[in-house]
Length: 602
Image (cartoon, rainbow, N blue to C red; front, side, top):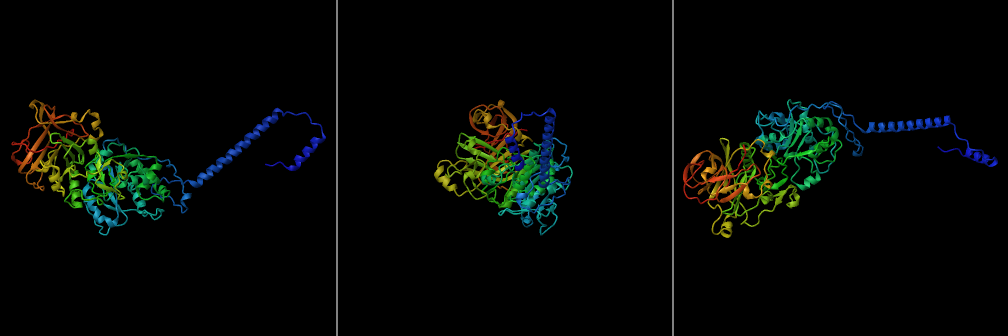
């Protein structure tokens, strides 16, 4: 405050006409009064500041209702006036009281995103993996489909709530992202009993339900958990987030997280009108709750186009859970149309879900051959020795979702396809699969390619590798339930030779009677692939049996796999005409090559 000018001038005049008086020191009472006055002034100032701050927050924070069905009013103001995220109200979450390891299909609710105009075609993809009368969940559409008939082999259909009250300002996306992002909240509000997990995916996603249950059993459903994986596309991850689960590959959300989302999501969505789709909106709201992404390598967004062979043949050592965009890639198996190929793909997945697409590598050092097997998909036979590090990288037979083929477009290891026909592998694709007791039997038929004649003339003038082999028969014992939790990796071994030897002979004392695996090569005419794996019929077969034990003698080859691998020995096997394709011991002269047996711990 300014002091009046008049008092200042009169004071100055008085001092000039009188002698300066001695300085007077204030008394003790005056000091006390001054201190009290200062204290009161400070208190009044602090009270004023506190009142202003409270008034500011009152206008900028929304108070959420404890009722999850209550939708907060949406402001029509610009995005700059949107409210910042507020804390969850004091409410008691009701998580399921359980421990990791006992989750079953009964505890999962599926939320499948789709659209009415595509459902007629894409329902066939859902039919491949859905388990009627066992799985729970719904297909969420934007409107009722034209042929709204109940199909007991498919999940029931629900129409999503109206989203017109939400603002959407992204110029390149579609408002359907708002609808799809709310599927988890709408599913939660159905109030289904005994729920621990919500699993979100698209109607063009194939899901391995058995492996999904196994993956969820690694986590505690009473905690807030957000499970999935980013995209294979580096550009997509850069645009959206490297810490975001892409919904096409599947997103698993625990019950407590779904409950929290049901409280805050509608208010949260209003803070992000500029986002593109559903996954980024869901990720934004989960980020406001402070829940990070738990990555699982078996969830596959599949942001690729073209030939998916390179990805399928090099699956990581992790349970296969899902693939997406099955319409955007070429037919999985040569010679089959897309849907028929997916039916065979799903059948192989159902027969042995745990080992499905798991890779194994074997070397025939005598013939300098490398065998790489993707169970349920393909056996690749390389005409030279290819080391494991190279085989672990996906051969780039595909392009990115944006149709770019540069290796920098992918957020995983890729390698260029072999340009020389002499280095390309011979491919044997799955033709049939079935069960023989606990064992899974797969028949892999040789693929016909245009370069076969060129390969014969220019690459192997003396002996074309496996020139008479038309089919490979692979017998696989089941994996243990938690095989993926503690695999033994190659880095724990001193050398490849210490993994598992394939020996041409050995003492009978070192061979155990129990057979672990056997591989048959079929020579001569191509067999009838439609024949059941367990059926009988005349075949000329080279059979090799691998038995657990300690090997002796000269090593002829080795195989490696990222699981528990003891040493093996191999029994002598020869040719003969047999009435059974399951014969264990064959007589005659051996002229063929061999593959390996997998040791799947029990």
